[in-house]
Amino acid sequence: MCDIAERITRQPVVWRVAAASDTLALTWPMSNVIQPAATARSKCRGCGERIAAGELRFGESLPNPFAEGETTHWFHLDCGAFKRPEPFLETLEALKEPIENAPFLAAEARLGLAHRRLPRVNGAERSASGQAACRACKDRIGKGAWRISLVFYEDGRFAPSGFIHLPCAKGYLETIELVPRLKRFSPGLSEADLLEIQSELAK
Ligand SMILES: [Zn+2]
Ligand SMILES: [Zn+2]
Image (cartoon, rainbow, N blue to C red; front, top):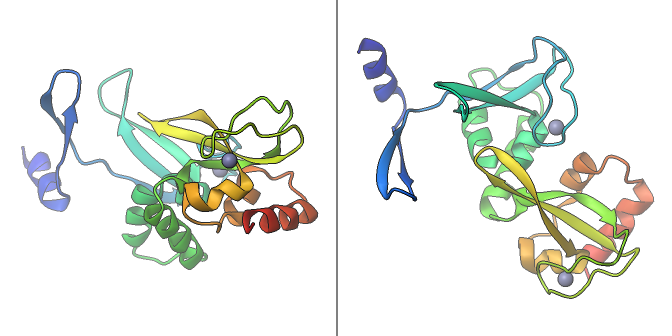
């Protein structure tokens, strides 16, 4: 009891509506962390790459879907700021010791909070087939044309959710400040690619 009482006073309890049963389910407050990776075994949920031992990482605590208790999803710090801006920013701001690139990380997380679709951005690439339609304007994205790939986050998972044209980003994402996240999620882009992308975004 003592432990529960302490947790209640520390953080507000989060209530979640269980849509299917239309009843209220209580979710205990979760403890998210920013801490160095003890080993190089964890994989980032944001970009899919390994997190190096000793590197600072963001851990988001979620209810374990397969068992009682919680499970932790790990992210590189920038991947956390880009893709999980709300829990990331809360955790960053609660740190007692400031970390090196906190201003950049906080700014990127705030951008994602201000523009609700921005955390869905998962990189940029040239359309291979020309088959996909743009989620914003519904027109086809021509073969070889640049496109932004999107993911949708639900229940702790990122699922592919289509593409948009670069010039459609301004309306759909409400911002064209995308380059840091495009570089992170599409590390193969060259400087020339990024310049081309920036000029198309501004169209
Ligand atoms: Zn990552
Ligand atoms: Zn479009």
